Image 1 (cartoon, protein in one colour):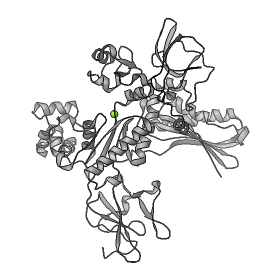
Image 2: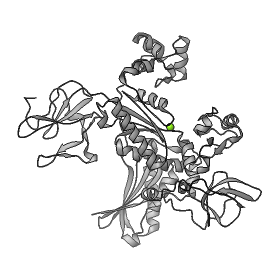
Image 3: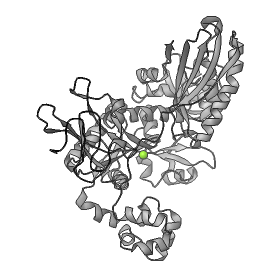
Image 4: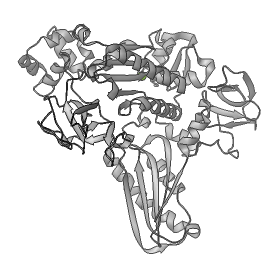
Length: 543
Ligand SMILES: [Mg+2]
């Protein structure tokens, strides 16, 4: 790198994915390798160190670790002052993180009596479907997406059927992913309980190092949440996902480079990403049953069978070529709408009335975007031009208009207290594809009962509900938090327990006793500090 001076940047090989960050030591002009990180694939590089104002190398704050990739091109790449970016060949390690039997595990976590028992989570009605099955239920052949009546028949009398509590799963998922993020800052989340990651520090690592990293990750999630995850690792997303499947339950599977081909070749062709029932059927008719048989076809044959668009991409995957980047799904942007009023608003009623159309406008934009929002922000600009912002974060992302607009309304401030308002804005952020309503259509009702976004105990004035359902969360003046195990003929059976209590006692009570009230399901997690942190409202003033 003799030709380069301070402030220049360089590239020693044409491997755009594999980037080494180099600092040219100012005094000697010698290059000093700072660290090696991978391209994040979304037009950014993951860089952990930078040069500060006085020329010292320092750790960059997390937010600045993503450097636009446009600095990096061809032979000579201009990076930041004093940093040199050079390419080198580094082995890629992609992780696939997947919670084990997530919904059923959260039920067993928060209702300790259910631990070790075959739990089926899902609709109780005649057409209900299994949303989650514990490993104890899977032993009998019960699976997610199976009709509930079929799963019950398979498991027999021991089956414990619980209605889904999406709000609890959402909070648990948030805490799990926060824990993972502390070790893997860039996560591509696939669902509630699944994500890809490509930790910078594993670029070029040995398989043993990767295994240690995954073990540490699992241990931290378990310590923080009490929940069990399996982790798979390999050279790309597909192999990592296959590996996590092999790792289950409660394990790790690191697929080394030299075993990858054999492993892939033996799998049923359906296991390939993007091979659905139709493609599978076409391939079966031609006698192609395994990934290996599919990989052995020529490009032309594949294009013939599966078409010229998807065929070649699937063929690449079958041969173990998977360069798809791991990237955070586009989010963190805010979708908002605001309005300036001809005349300042001076009463709370005026502010409330004005909020409706603005929030609805923002909500229409959100619907067009297709994602759900977790955070609702209202902005109030006063006649003295100062701005007040208040926001609240829901336990999960939603597109539900009444939840989002209702949350915005609750954040409003009274002009009598803060002074006349000349501009009002409503914003939705924390946008993500993860929307659990599709899984839990009854979720919004559950949320109404728990007074979104406050996750405080249900108001004491609430009258007893018409009928208790199995799985309802309740609180008793003496026995504390519990859940309804059975109800009918004027009595209810309640098991009093939470995550932290261990298996609890059961009491039979009159079903109209004033001692029992409906409770927030989230309380069954007994994570008061974490949940308080989630619902803390942020106040912010700016001139
Ligand atoms: Mg899972």
